[in-house]
Length: 93
Image (cartoon, rainbow, N blue to C red):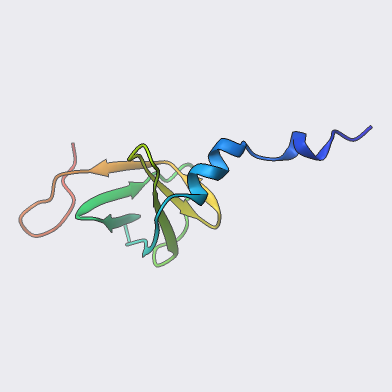
């Protein structure tokens, strides 16, 4: 017996958060970083599952002000890199 279709559906709350959040498309740099509103977000490379450099990613800011990064409709875990070196490269923590 196959489970009902609603059992396969993603959370409605997550869908509503994304549906009502502003989205902006960005391009991933060589080190998987995107700039969004003068902040840097670095996607985590989870065992090679991170999209390639130059790929398009979508940044969403939910109503609770949390920032989410998506590529190919999948959410990527990301780090907020708040510090920039003088030459514009990302500083490690």
